[in-house]
Structures are given as C-alpha cells and as structure tokens.
Length: 352
Image 1: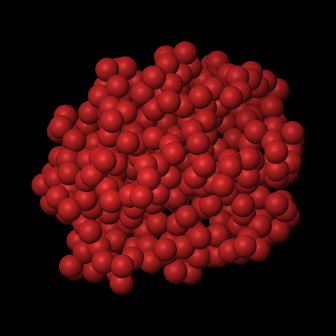
Image 2: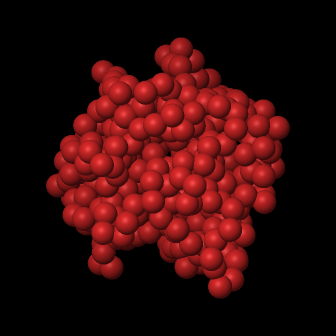
C-alpha cells in the first residue's frame, strides 16, 4: 500500500493548488478513533476471497460463523439470521465479507448498487502500478464499468483510474500510481492500501454537516463545488461508465481510512423509502472504532443520526448501530485496542 497521500483522490488529478485543498483529521480528543472495518455482503466467500487475495493482496485474518446473534437479527429485521464472515485485511483497513445462509426474498430481489448509489457506492484501492492490480482484478472475474483502458485524468499526475465490479456488483475504484515517476527520496514501503470508501448522496450539504460534527472536522476537502473545479469530462465518464457526469465531492479522514461523499448533479441519486437489506449483495455498513460507547452514541445523535439498536455484545466488545441522514448503516464499536476489530492495531495508521 502506498505510504504517501500524494493528494490523489479519484478526481485529485485535477492538480489543485494547495490553496484550494483543505485537509482534515480526527481531533486528538475525539471519541472516534478510526474505522474498525467495513461490511460487505457477498454470495460466495471462497470466490470472493480468491479474487481479493490474488488481485488486491487482502489477507484473511478471521473466518467465523455467526448464528443466534441479536445484533444481526435486529439489523436484518428477522430472527434466526446465520452468516459466515471472513475478515480480510490490508495494511491500513479491513473488510468483513459476509455470506448469509438464507437471504430474504427482498434481498435476493435487490439489484446491485450502481455508480451513482445511493449509499456505499465503491471502495478505492490505491496501488503501485507495477502490481498490475487492475489487470489481475479483471483476470480474476471482475468486469470493467467504463472503458477497459485505465484513464490518466491529468498528464501532470502519474495516476491511472478505473471502475470495475466484482461477482456481486461491489464496485472497486483502482488507482494505479506510477511510483517510479514520482520525485521521492525513497520508494513507499507498501505497494497497496485501501484509500477511501465512497458514499453517494442527493444532498451533500446535509451529509457533510452530519460527518463534520460527528468527526469534529468543520474544515474538510471539497472538490467540484466551484465552477472552476467542476468534476466532469470525457475521461471521468470513461472511468465510471456514465455519460455527461457532473459532480462534487467532500473528503473526511477517519484516521486510517478516508470517507468520500459524492453528489452527482448529472445523474441524481435516489434514496430508497426503506434502507437496503443487510443481506443484499453490496457494502452494507461502516463500523467506527470508538473509545467510549455512550459518548459516541450521544455525539452521533447530536450530529443528526438515528440510533437503531441498543448496545449488544460483538467481537469481544460492545456495539451500537445507527443510521446517518441518508440511512447508511454506521456501527459504533468499543473493543480492546489490541482486538482484531480495533483500528488502533494498524501500525502508524498503516503507514509502516
């Protein structure tokens, strides 16, 4: 995983000057310490594991069957939920892939999340170009969304972009960085990292208001919200597989993972009347690592979120779930700092 930020988000290749870029991070005294894991529902764990291990170099760190779980029953809205989970880790983050034994009829009838969302729309992997991660992802069974050829959005930045989907419609944004072309005193220690999780929203102001309060980041990076920074163009269309994209985005750093919030002006995101089923294939939750569950819960509600479960035991700790203003599922989990699910067990936030 790349150990340097390089200012390269999906649209970072606009080569913004420093005066136009706002950076942010969690305050030192924040009750939120980072991202413990992101959940994703898939239909075949073995097939998914092989794809992400071979192409993205994610490593399995836990393989567990969960049954008679009050947490999952509450989130799925039915009793007797059984799920096999597989936690796969990068140097800075981890994804918990979940395969449900008996998906609900509604889940089976729910289509994959498209590029424009709503909700969790893609995970971004930033890698050294020499790893050929994108090529390996396609060879493993993924399908490209736009043009097959990766796109260099700005000739001054040696970064190449693609959107592709796995077997279950989970979208991956892969950023190939030509590290050899960068002026660095020494090469990065890691060739791959998970850069960000992206949310699509119809109301970017409402959602950024929520996350700026929750994360204690009133100043955050914005792209596309001024006319001279419009996020549009043929190359962006070629990456995402949509014509005439116009959008804007905001970025929050949650210690070990960046959260991107994107609004499509050209392809409006439609929020469903009810939340997406937990057992429908796709990214299903983001779980924040917190130091104090009561304080995190109060902050979540203060920011404008809605708590949907009471504290329950999970992963050797306690967890509460809530929904942000777009009804995206957010977990607040307290666990020992050396626990598998703690963001604080990544050395130096995955930099080393």
